[in-house]
Length: 410
Image 1 (cartoon, rainbow, N blue to C red):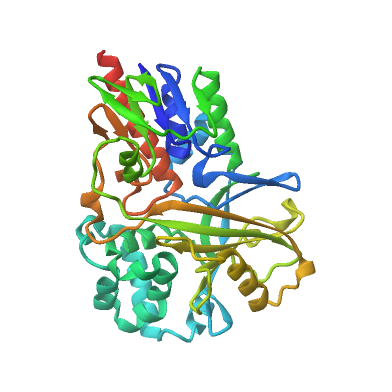
Image 2 (cartoon, rainbow, N blue to C red):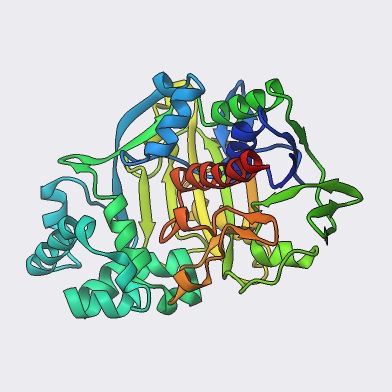
């Protein structure tokens, strides 16, 4: 079977890795490197992801893949701290004492929030697909908890779409982040960087005879009876990992549009750390970014010889003008960072960074196969109601299994 895979992100690479030993696989990626949102920069003799990444204790598909690629021994587990930036003040929210001292929620509100966190893993999120996050939190915990704690998080993640976000997404987010100890959240990272995972997948694909073509966007596909024409070459089937509406634009099947948003992520190397030891600092105060992720408050700065922070911003529609300048200027002013303290900056922008989990999102998810073409990616069921590396791996595994069954029947 001759297979065309469109998109060299994690899902596409996993599918190619699993199919290349059995099929003739050609993978096309429009960017200069594979990896999608898991791509990395090479700076000062080390690798650092373009977008902040970590994994969770429940990521079993990812762990299985790492074991297959002889990378599981590189996985390390570290306590990651978090906090809130409110009225020009940083509030750590990790230890019981820190949480009790947080002044923007009452003791009763904090108790209700803690109980929801405990219950979140046992809540059937599918039943909340048509319930807004705002409605669920307001009815379950009260208006104060919503406006003081959850609304800023939803605003920083989804902006003007925050009122349409389903409670299914929010509860899934709470559940996946509930692996906490007395001093913070327990998160995983691949020692040396996740670029090793991308390189191992590329190596596996090529060793098995698969082909990876970078800087090669697919411009036109066409259905030919029981085959597909891709830019003039005939394939038995296609695996598309790009957004369904982008696939439709180049000739794919018509699907209900999945709502997407873009991401603008600035990475900064600098002399010192600025968030008082906190890894994930959510911004309640207005800022051109929704969170500051201090990578070297998670992974020791000695591995890099400097401190590294991410400024994370999401957008809908067009990228805000001069967003890079706004983010950089605000960060330097807010934390009194001088020009000479900055070593370097990088800006990553992806207009298709991820789905927006609006009310009724579940009904929009396309089936894997349509007219002999397979679709799998961030929009698929393994990434509902929250996307993750594990979901991306699982989406690649599941679509490869379906094609293998088709191939075995022929």
